Structure formats: C-alpha cells, structure tokens
Image (cartoon, rainbow, N blue to C red; front, side, top):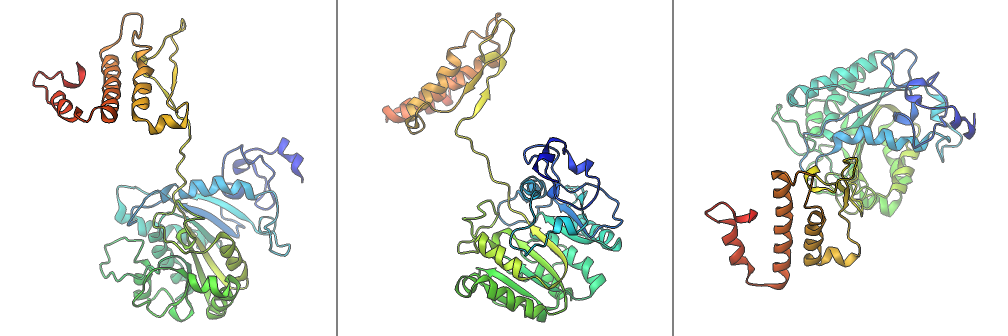
Length: 400
C-alpha cells in the first residue's frame, strides 16, 4: 500500500474491506468517517468503537459542540496515511480493529431523556466486547458514560484534562450541567477518588472531593511528562476513564472552545502528556469537542434577489460582491453605504416588467442605509430628522 493507492481508494467510510490498515484516500475527497474507518453497527471482532454524541444543551457559555463529532471526523482525514508519530513504531490503525459506530440518535427536544440514552448506547458497545471512544458534545455526556462503565468495572479512576474540575456542588438530580458531572459522579460512587486526577486546571476549587489536582502552572513548571508519570502512578492498575475537555488547552490553540480560560496547556504539552500515559488500564476515552471554528471569509458573495439583479438574456441573476475594494472601504461608513446602495441602484430596472414590490422595498431599504451611513459621518444633526422619518404617521417613513 502506498500513496499511489489514492487513484483507487475512495469512500473508505463504506468501502473499506477490513477494520485494520492505513488509508491513502485523498484527504479532501470522499465521505468523512473517523480516521477513514468503516461505518457499521456490527461490533463482531471490534476492538474500539468510535461514536459521537452531538449534544450541547448543558453548556454555560457558547454552544456549538453538537457539531464536534462531524468536525473531528473531517479533521481526522489528515491522520490516516502514516503511523502515529512518536509512538515507537506502534500503529493503532494497523494493529487495532476500529469501527466508526456513528452518532447516537436522540430527540433534541427531549433533553431529559438524553442521559439514559447515552448510558444504554455505551452499554450496547461494551456488551459486544468493544471499548468506547466517544466524541462530544459537551461535558455533561461524561456522567452517563461513567455510569455505564461503573456497572462493568466498579468505581473507576478518572483522568480528566480540563480548565475546570466540574465539581460544582449540585444536588438536584434533574439538572443536566456540563460543570457538575464530576460532583455527581463522586456522590454516586462512580469514581475512585484516590486513583483519579484533574490536569490543566485554571479555576478556583474550594473542595475537589479528594481528586488530585495538577493545575496548568504545574504542567508548565515541571513538564507534561512528569505530571503524566504522577497521574499514571496514582491510577495504578485501576480501570481508567480518560476525559479530555478541549478547554484544557490554552485558547491560543483551541479558540473555538465554549469556555476559554487563559494559561492552559499547549498542543505540544497535551501530546506529550497523552503519550506518557501509556501503560494505564484504559477503559474509555472521551473527547469533549470545541465549537468548529467560524468561517469568516474576506470576500462574501451574496446572491441578489431576482427583483434586484441584472438579468441576462437567459434570465440568470448576478452575484454582488459585498467585499470592499480597499481596506478603507470597511472603515469608511459613507463609502460602505454608497457601495451597498449602488449595488442595487445599478440594476433598479429589475425584470422586463419593472421591479416587483419586494424588489422596490429591498432597493429603497439599501438606499436608506446609505443615507444613514452618510449622515452619521457628515451631518451631526441627522438624528432628529431620521427619527421623524421612522415615525412618519402616513406610514411612508423608510419607503419614501
């Protein structure tokens, strides 16, 4: 197998002949799956089942992690050609039978039902003899996953990379909260606190319920390798649940996280820490994903409504480029207003039978925006006149 196999490999998410091996499918093509593994529900002979839980309705700040599993799958296409770097020849894709089990189905409008569904979802995978690799989703999904694992392994060691310990006191069992799952897990006896550790913490904790804390400053001062060694020794031979919250990284490396906290781990430190955990008895890994990065192109091409576009002989509409021609255009409100007004003014005739009513309204609205931008810059007295225009008793205000 070599790079020339890109000529024949496509859609390995469905066509991969077996569960092991590298993939040379073009990274920019094909249906995305986690590391180009095959999708499926048959867990026979599977070592690791990768599954997504696209749930983010328990966050305190920015949502968006529901899109995490999809984004992780897409990004993972870059990692399928070579063995993992720095793992002394160990190639997980070639040595482990890995299946993309797809995402968990749930009704987003019945939030209270989600934890029980997560518990059952993980139990189905483990009953088949496979280990779980879960992509979130916000951190509230970890509580039902811990419940499922505790049923099989008993109290489990939790290794959690995070900016927060998620041990905020919360004794209301009906609440679903990404910041309290660890508190609830300890109270329910799911976690062996003497074997557990939090890494990368950068928030104040009054009572961490017996779980060791290795804050981000310690990682920076002593090194990720030393911290990993201490965490590994604390866990011993106990079954380990590894949970990596993306805000464990500094926002410079993961700006899309919902709850950014400065001073976190670098991506290099995280890689070393995870590498040095080798040897623990890992039962499951959960990745709480950040929001996929927002795409803000410098030039946005917006289709003009039919009633406000130039028409060719074939009747096709024309795109209007809303990007400035020079950087100064965006800082000059008058120029921006004139540009927006002119975009439709040059095509004000519209279709052959004249502009439709909605076309006239759109055209005139853009003209009003242009006037307001001009007045804001050049006429300090515009405010009173514009208020009068908005409150025109004849109802003509904006559309004169």
